[in-house]
Image (cartoon, rainbow, N blue to C red; front, side, top):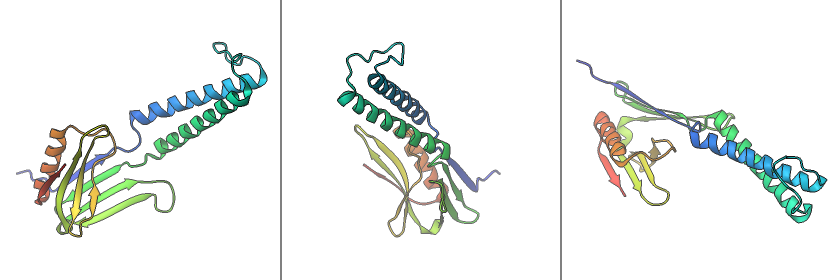
Length: 183
């Protein structure tokens, strides 16, 4: 008889394809804008496949320099988020000790890691919030007796409706607590 007493789910953080894509795109775009700006300032063609002749340094070149610096700044920010792997962690449901642990990584510093511990008795229900539209949301929450909602799912692409419901129902059955669906 194999009874599962501890369930652990890994949560993916910032190391996702979208973040790598935007980091590379913003970096290359920022470098491109800066090089074009510098070409218009020095009146020299710094890249062989570009032309600066129609761009005056004041005001277009200065604006392109600003956009280039902004693009590089955002790419460095996203690179740091990827390196620190913000948002990654795990959810652990332990029936032996009657505890739930939610662990996430945050920004570097004294309180980098977030550790939340709850007794299963403190949990009122498992709730699924579903919002469709341009920016869809499908999140599983732990709802405590004092009405706090602790998100259990990551910030990556929303799971299909059938999978998120199945995951929430399985978890509710595992913890022997009610399940709610809100739209």
